Amino acid sequence: MPKRLLAVLFCLLFLTIGCVPILSFSSSAASQSSTPTPSPTVKHTSRPSPTPDPSKWHTDYMIDNFGDRINILFAYGSFSGSFSNTATTSSALTVQVYYYTKTKYQKESIKFRLLEYNKIKANFLSNAKLSFLYRIDGKTYRNVIEYDGSDYLVLAPSNRDYSTWGSLSNDQVKERFEDFVNALNEGKEIQCYIEDSKYGSKYHFDIDGTGFNNAKTKIEEHYSSKK
Image (cartoon, rainbow, N blue to C red; front, side, top):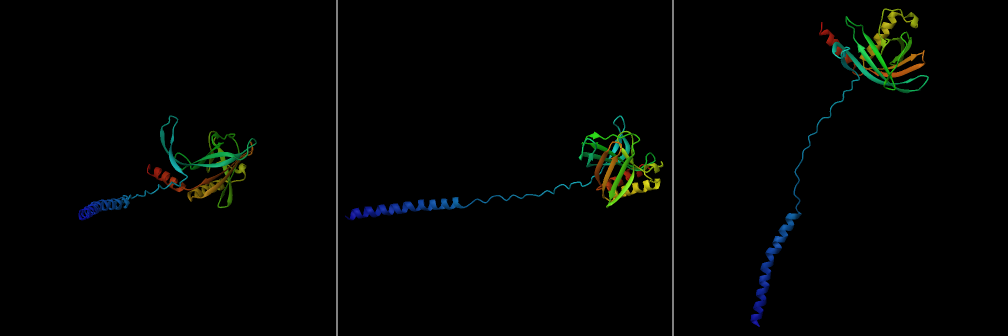
């Protein structure tokens, strides 16, 4: 009986000593697996967004008939509007506007190229008398605009007699032209209306003067550097 008791005690002691390391190891492994591994910190460097150019006006050089650039710098902008005639009402219109400063070779002028349906050049009779109205700061003006016989309607002071165009004197034509340019120079918006009574065509569009002053200054500096 004592021998059997000693054998039982020996087995219990062996099992107790042998299980402790196993339980201890399992507990350590569970502890390690339950601890989350910290993720590396990623720093994002924010890049400033490019500032959009708000200018509606740009500058470029004229080219000759051979495609070569010539030393005549001008400003230009493209604007949207609508037109109506006997065949259509309030259809899409693109108006390309060009500004030329005064030099010894050319007079100061603003030219308009009207594109009906945004792609078809508007045509006028060579002797067409067009009605040109525009509004600046809520005040409406009337002035003379002429077709150059090819692509453009031209707004410019001249020495010709405009009395038959609606009792406008040369001084009035010049003064109102200067008002037009000054409004653009101040970044104002000009509402424009052109009517060709011969064909019943009417054109509405707005010109945004934003950036015109910078373009005009660049042109003036270009010509002053050539003196």
